[in-house]
Image 1 (cartoon, rainbow, N blue to C red):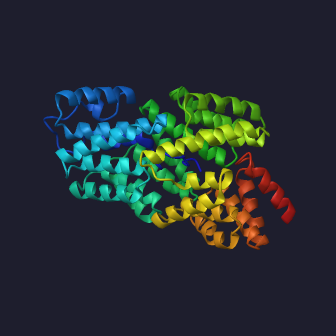
Image 2: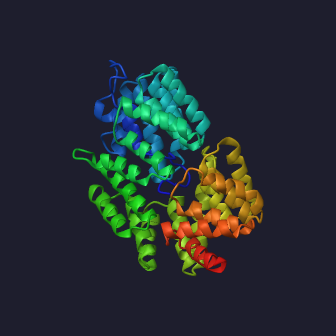
Length: 432
């Protein structure tokens, strides 16, 4: 699945750079204010570093500009996302607090609070802020995008689709197209998902939007085993934004799928050297483990654990990615504890998958079965979900189900994981 991100990230859709544009672009749903910040700053049209500096300068001379405090809060969260540094979260919280103190019912301040809550994986809190923002301004697309992201992560998919559609009706653009695309992808409609993303690369689109959409078009192609199309989309993303590291990671995944593991490792090492985010460290570690370099893999997994600990200290709750990491590379008991805690808070398909996989890895496949079945209930075309269900079906005593789901995983993407795809092939061969 193309939007699985480990710790300290807005969970779905356009990411925080695009979210900033939705949240803080002046429009008909926000009456003009005498103390409003310059459009380029509020809309996030400068680079992230430039926006932070410009907003800070603005607030030195206009400390009661609540909308600039809201915009600064979101830019701080974006910095946390792109750098992996949890030290940005206290700054974001302070900016949100100032914005809310100046305008307790201001929809921009409430939306910024929702973005911060979502980045910390407090999706129930994010939804509360989104609901309050929508009540304060029923014509606010910004409120609906916050609501969409929270509802997706809570597993309330019909409501999420309604919120995303409402946002698109109010202010169509790449942030709304990408959210609608993701919802289509979750239900297995990858054709519609791709068509929506292509709307973000039409003439006149910003380079960041083009890179984002091209990357995710590449992920859709790669997850369906079309590596040539995926490579073309990653190249297009890097043409739009040469510093777009997700597209570089996509190229590494294609190299691995085509048998060039050494090339994939080189790319991942360069990425982790620049940005040691847990997602990339995990993927590099798994490549090294599949190559037999257990010491190198252990080093990367240690990076992941350190990043998770830092995120926890900054108030970021564990997500299903942490549960899966613990299930595969840590302690099954810890994974079960994490998965159960997360399931108590939200019922998304990825939380169900993570809990089911943790139970399986702990030797409890019968308990795991309802969760992995719930994880595949939408028809999502994600080979890892299908693989997990197949392995659990086998262990729970359902060989026919195991053959079906393992076969579907490999038919969708025969190289979906350097560690799990070989297990899927071996297991399926034994079942036959």
